[in-house]
Image (cartoon, rainbow, N blue to C red; front, side, top):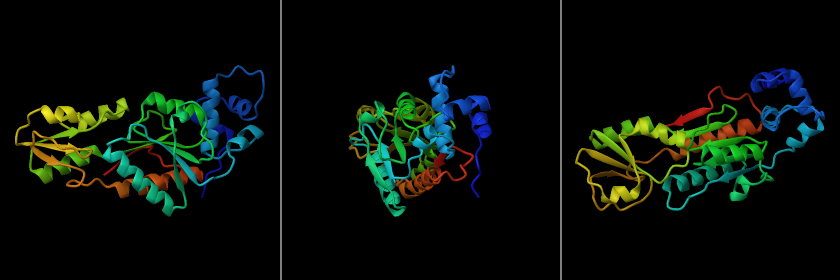
Length: 265
């Protein structure tokens, strides 16, 4: 059964008084409330489906069954392309369509969508999108230090262990494109023995006890043991099912999950 949220619940989530929440949701003029606090209150109110005024109702305009996807730097990225395909397939099964967003989502509110998937973007760009929109926003292949939003990543520690078992090597190096999310890159550094780009992989020498885990198709001339996306398939279908399931629950304002940082293996 869905929980009925009150102004008191929203105030607690935002760390403000009930009066402040009331002033914002009822659009009371001449109140010294910062723009950031107003945005936070409106975002939380919309996420939980709370409606008490014309202002709040305007944020809950009904479902379009469209989910916007912002995925910059997708060229030559196998992971991004595979994820996008898997997400589109799962969304279609659930009666939703994915709409690709351009860089304009960093400048203005995106229209005719119920949620946004932001794939591998920086904390700064994610914040801009969050400030521009009052709909659920999901960070995919990145980490966001804000429990108002969900973030999804592959469980790289599990992937590392599986690569060791499959290759019978003792060292795993992740070969990937530039990662936009600094926090996510820091997480990956704790999972793999080393992270390098493709240019480095093509010139660096590796010993026979090293496995290179590739995130996109690439011919490495200086070969050691390679595990590409075909030889070592990532669970794109499992990943997409979980993302779409949680996205729809959030869009429908069902009871939210406790954990907002989800690793998928």
